Length: 405
Image (cartoon, rainbow, N blue to C red):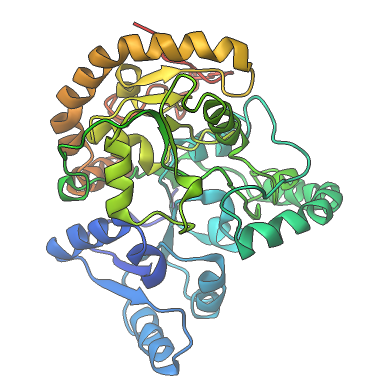
């Protein structure tokens, strides 16, 4: 750490992918907070325009400011890399951190993890998938079929065959690139109250699914095993949703967004259908990634059913009814669903009562302050994490399920 300059999150220039940030509510809201605080933002449109690349070159080479890369796809990062190769002096935000090209994680001064799971894996406290593994092959049918999911599904056998060779490369990269704990900063997702308004929706469904059930990625980070490339890491969610669908109208009312015409739900429909459900299915996938949906559902006052994440969100015990998504049988599930409905009034009240606290705790201004305090050597407040993996004493070996009470 002796040669690493102190990072100032607000005084750095943020280079943000326009498409990715513009298509996500938290991305748009976070950029608005940064701009309101005077932080310089450069929205990168992909680099197809020579004028845009020249403008970016001037920012990088005519200024000596630290830059933070955020909401950029691997392709966009590849386009920017020639401008950064000799300059360096940058940090990178990892949303789906396993996607990030190795050069960036190796050369970055800091890696800002949106999901605490990333710190745990990088620091050796948890494997990337800590429990049940996804099926060897991917079935893209019958819902949410897209060109992307079909292509990735077809690539899965080749990716699986190549994984032993890629693991050798990962081993070498990890061996030659020692982990520096001080380089890893936790920057969780923020939330804006205006994005998750409480609406007076009439309950129409006992259980619902308002999120995808296909999580397919290329593993680029050497700390993410190559064997999970093109695997469906949301198989746990898919399995529970399919089981719930088998009880539709016999005896439970059920909603499944996979039946909608659009692959991605419009935000207004997402808010409406979520708040029309007593419970919505949730998990971070088999890799236990703390997705924004945990926070969005909680702030909408909607209890969840599924699997909590093991390290973050100490508040989740009040709002998630735990189910063994990979192990439960249809016969075992029905009494659990009845039990969940009995507990609904209490869990709904707890979710509503916790809304204002979560909106304050996860306002992006406060998130930035918390991350800056880590840069300055302070620990992460217990409001955000259940197990501080930067401490040698913390070695959670299995995901922790919240209590029923």
